[in-house]
Image (spheres, helix red, strand yellow):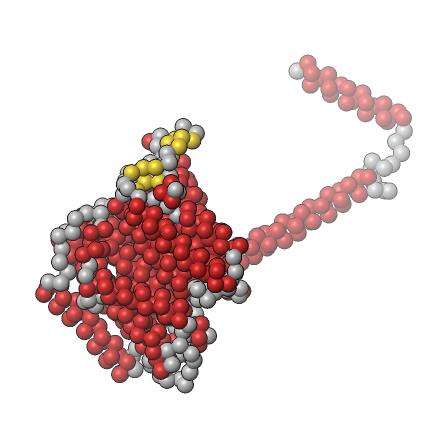
Length: 563
């Protein structure tokens, strides 16, 4: 019976049913749902299921293949880890929204047609925003509204692309799309918004840090990885994506280094990791696509681990501002240790999961002779070590001891972080099971002397640079501040521009009103001149004079008529 359900339905329906439960029963029920969903995927053979015809179009709500299964597996793993991390939460809104959000993402990666994809695409937006609003602060409400507007806007553009696709091809099949048509361009923009392309990215840094402690863990795993899946499915080999991805890997480093909010730092780091995936998809070779989806798999775990660690700090210390933290390793040693594992993974240290995935992308780029892109990725790798590999654990748990002494994270949080850390190390030491899940056969060994030595040198020089800058006092200080990114456009420039336009319109309205008033006054003067008490038309005219005027008018009419 479980095989008859569409993937994701267990999470969505179960999440809704969990609203009927309370306390530990609710938490336990939510923890079981991802395990049931994962079991369903393991038993599900490849193929297309539940096809229906609607308005002359054949819809394929479920398509099972290697690519969709890989994302389905990691989404269920991430949902389980997030549910375990949120075991202590007694907020039904968060619990229902989190599991429904995960289920919508799972359903989307198994969609065989664009209409089904659109339905799940919008469902991820509607469910995920409650994880932001659940913070119940004014900042979270405003960030959630901006987030919802952008995510729903992405869906509207996707719908326009689908309509154009039907007009062009008569089909809604979700396969390779490319950029050779209007529909392909529109759908790419919609995906680019969700994937946080440059200048379309700041919804990520604006909203994720405002989510709840547990909500941010859910958010880090699904929306952007769903977009990566859509790119891999529809745009593999689109060269423009290689350059977009390369830029995505580099620019977040400059903002992350000066950022004070450590969850915003992680959001920038997530943006950079997405760049490696997008770049691999743009290269489009089998090795590059394997590297991109492998990176999406491991990133979903270590990125969640880092958000868990910072969430534990926020839960216990009440802040994740680097300028207010320091010395927490003394009272939260387990959290600090797990954070270091996540940092080593995202920095691609050998023997950690990031290394075995990122090496695939770097090798694929080098094989294609794209040396400018390769150098950009190498620079970005050093930047990731600086702002996530070092800055997050250093300022979060070490740094200047400010005398903060708190309890260690709750046992369920530690267990979730421990399992995530175990996966990071296990995949890094033995990547063969991950490689076996990839879309194409992998004949690549990341642990050659050349790969290990090159990456180790890069990491050692990056650590040396951090140490020297800190020693010389040249590293950007951690100060309470709000750093504006591309959100400057809509948080500063657009309000000023709107104010200017409104001011100009108000001035034009006042000028028009003044002119109308003057014209009306002149009109009234003329009317009063002729119709006033002493006006010409107000005088008494003799009957004879009136008859003469009638004759004159009649003569004029006759002349006009006959001529």
